[in-house]
Image (tube, rainbow over all chains, first blue to last red; front, side):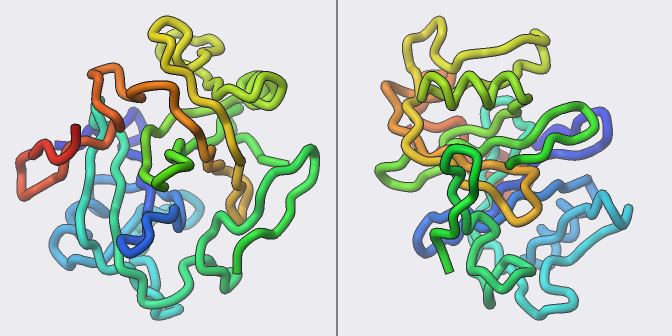
Length: 110
Length: 110
């Protein structure tokens, strides 16, 4: 089973199960992991709001979990997901839509 | 530019630039980011050892950085890399070699 850090969190990486691209990074506590497993939809712990956060709860862009992979020391998890829409709150498909080039950021993805 | 959290860290996700698979998750501080940019090889901050850690410094399995992507709120980074060998200390290609299935972990990758 996954292990949570001293703040009760583990790092979660969401990938698109269709093309493998990284969509977002967030954090899960035990409650979020349980809600994800029970519902089949990705839930996280919002550190800024201090509460359980179902991804897409307001936008409708939920993430249906296809598979969960755990790393060697069990403190990080990859959620392979089927996204209902753009993952990023900016409307981009992925939160990682910019490349770091020298000291500037260039947009590379829609 | 990336932003570091209250511990001076940002979350780094390493993917294989060839097939897009997630290889590992680690943390970077400003020193690790600078060393990565200067050398073109992935460096992290080892929380357990409290020091700069060049991935592959003992195993030789360095990660050549092809591209760095930054997320919307700039507190996570994806390093698209060309790996010199297996990334995981267990010898597996990726640290994410097990799937979470109910309450058990099944090995799914070499």
